[in-house]
Image (cartoon, rainbow, N blue to C red; front, side, top):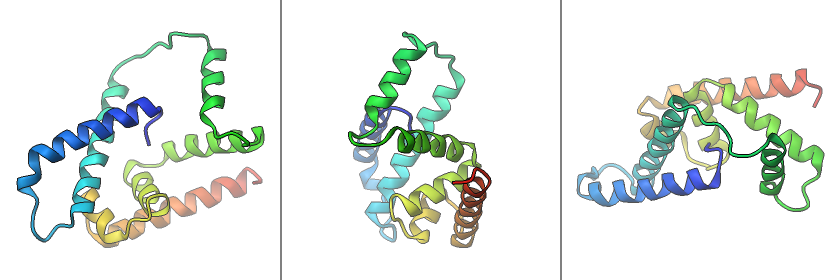
Length: 147
């Protein structure tokens, strides 16, 4: 969701601080897992929104950025798979926000639709729609690109 490990660590730290400050406000009917995931997602979204409002110029050449990106991919990953991963991340970022978040939370975090609904503050039936639309978009994208 976030582009760098540093941003993810900062968002996690923000989440832990927010959770510690508001632990007394958790509703009894709410699971602590979905409550914390909601705080973490909101912290990450806050960072993304903040980043989109600021214009950042990289402090190195584009070759340096490409080298950093290749280093972030796990060892043993082929260049083709790294390129595919980068392309997939780019495509997912183009999806509508709720579709992307619901898809990622379901398929990568394994959260049930009810928890995703709590986090996105919507009804479960909408979560299923978001996930299905994102899934169809991903399938179409890879079919059209011949992968």
